[in-house]
Image 1 (cartoon, one colour):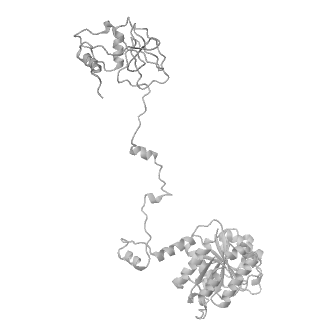
Image 2: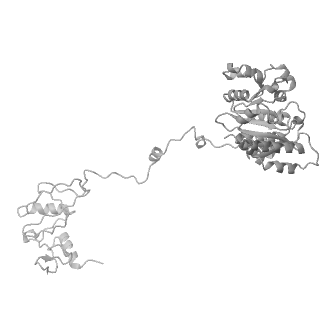
Image 3: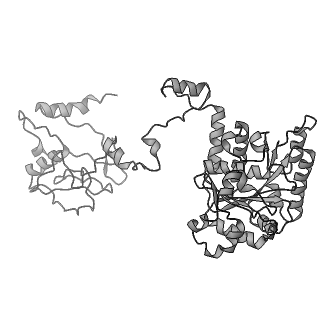
Length: 463
């Protein structure tokens, strides 16, 4: 609401240089006889002295601040001014110190409000209205600049985060409509791999998983001629294809095993140096490097093999302790080893093989006898202290003999699937059934995929 007319009259009179009208106030007295201001209830009204009233016609300068008005009043009546008591400076100077006018002689002093007032001597100049304290408040940036953002942001890691600087490139599709479109457009249209290719790539990643340590997988069965050695060669070649480190396959078959012949071919093996596991055992104390070990091994590409003993008189002489010495030597240079155990689980070296095995492959066939023997093998393992190996075993059913339609393959698979970790079927393939050289190039795509699933499954079991 607007101020009363008598309150506005005094500033107008000061500006115009006219006599100021008297201030209207109510004279209220408290119980102790002191005057009480009508408006605030605490401050006493101050009646100006006649000498301080400006002469008529003399313009009164307008003060821009209370500090200037107080300084002018002190200079106008220095004789009648009350003595100024110096006030100790506060420990921290406020941004704009308050200034109060000094009461003139004969006037009642304002009651103490509890807050010390800032006083200035007559010789000192009053602080200007644009007073800047000694400790100016720090400038606060409201909106960060680009330099602040860069300084506060962590430096990018060019090694662990290459995707921050390079766009991810889709894998090249192979085969099918996607592969044909990629080839016709020279790579301009890349729809990425299809679902089948993505599954194949996932199998490759599982096989190539980096391992910490050396692991051994034993391939065994209770019946011969059902694909045990061919599975060892096929899985070994698959591991060698996808893994960065070459695997090793050991022929521990006591009955003149043919692991190396199936991997190299009969003709090449006959021309090679006839080094066997017996020769390695005879000189094992002098083998202290991979170069020295290579003299007792055969190589089918990146698959390294140790041949079994071919002499029937000494082939069954491999003991559990001797196999463990071989296994310890192999573990120094190979992260994955496959052991072709031969037929049966009771020969001399079998206890050492099972003791050092990390998981098992149980070879089986679709014939009724082959399926029963695979189940008997798992029960024998569980009853002789190898329950974990039996539970985590991978059963591989190879359709080697291409049984007739009278055999219910689905019933056999269901019969074996419930007592092992995984069951994988290998389809009938002439490259496996002939009993000769096993190479991945001549195998059917379904057979190669089955070997990839077996390889991925056994690597998954390495914990």
